Image (cartoon, rainbow, N blue to C red; front, side):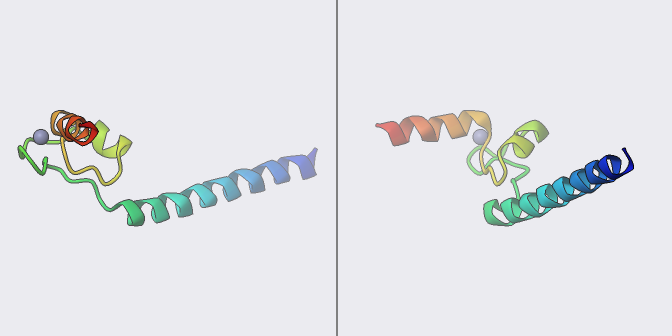
Length: 71
Ligand SMILES: [Zn+2]
């Protein structure tokens, strides 16, 4: 039981470290999310900035860009 417990602790530590390294790499690659929209300069909601790393526009403007790209 002791060995298993230790293995689980080591596993979770490893996982946490791996996730932290990934988050760091991902964050550096994607850049930091803007607090204000590039187009309309309204505040970008915190939830969106976390969900979309490196996002530059609010939902409305991002959707507009998406629509324009599809045409
Ligand atoms: Zn906007």
